[in-house]
Image: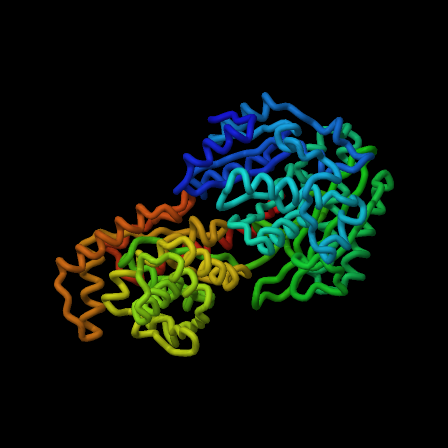
Length: 545
């Protein structure tokens, strides 16, 4: 592990990382299991994991705890090394500020006023300006493709996601679930300030959120009812000095009158001299009815089931090389489970076909990226599990055109263009963000939806995949020699696995299924069984929203 204390040392390593997927976990140190969960996810999804340790003076107010904020660099260093971190950037304030100063003389990032009207912002003037400024500086220095933040700081997440969007920073800000103690207390570096008795008082925050959540699940979407239920629980803890209890929209952060279809229930309070925050997301998956949960937690409090407090139907991500049977199986699984089917491969084929039609050179990354950004793509699932996804480009249906051998030959090269992938991944994430979908491709579980609840990687030999492809082409009236198909598949496998952006590989938590000696229905049955097992497990209450 590299221990970097200067910007100059960091920049040397950044230059050496070019061509790799770099992930950043920004922290203020005093690491705990919440931070380690971010690091583990980053290591799963990225080639290089960088952790920053920096207590940022810009985000502390005059009367806040900058001087006493917990610091233990040696312990943090040992934890990062044990967690497999590749590099730690631990600068001093002087190294970060250089000659710019830390006050009025430096450049600041100003979040939109609309995101500063609720939650923490009115109570911590200038806080999010300081957060956004230092995070942008870190993103500029490390140049990661991904950066990982905890959902506990929900307002911070929204502001940073808006910042990278508005400033077109080529980094994806990823939200990771809150990690909790077994009794539900959200992990925080500031928890170590709490005495034993104060810690018991602090449990009231999450219990109040759960009361509000249960009230909503019981069928009342009104802010008045949800907040009253949460407030009733808070009243049991008179030692809590409540700063706010609010129900806001998770993206706009504006106050809600009712949850439709989702809301963020958030609270902040002082326990003694320690300020703590917590939140729960109230959201219903498409087609789900709000009803009481059946699970009971300690002290008779029902807990929102599943791995998060946002109940949604799981995503199924099916990856694998060309010809492994992903599309056929994914369509069949989606049809059987009544889930949305998203054919990402058809999107890349569409851009490839358009480029060939318009005479765009397939090594011209700029023109290909512009084509992907400007083309309006529309998709519609086939009428049955065996029909291909219908796709339109700028209003023209090209469903059959994109299945030609020429498109098949070149689609891997086009899909490896970073700009093309970035544009199409945006659309894919937008379609699948609410869950309840089956998605297939070559990097769905590793890049597009790394948080998919079920990840499957289908494999098959080159010979088997060539025979399947030949059968498909014959059904379309095309004759192609088997050896030519095998050569094309081998070449495509090599391109897909060696491309610098999102190379073809199973996600660390993917379930591998070799389809060589399995029928399509047998593969389908295996995935459906895995999905049903996932649903059964998710009915067990957990404290890890």
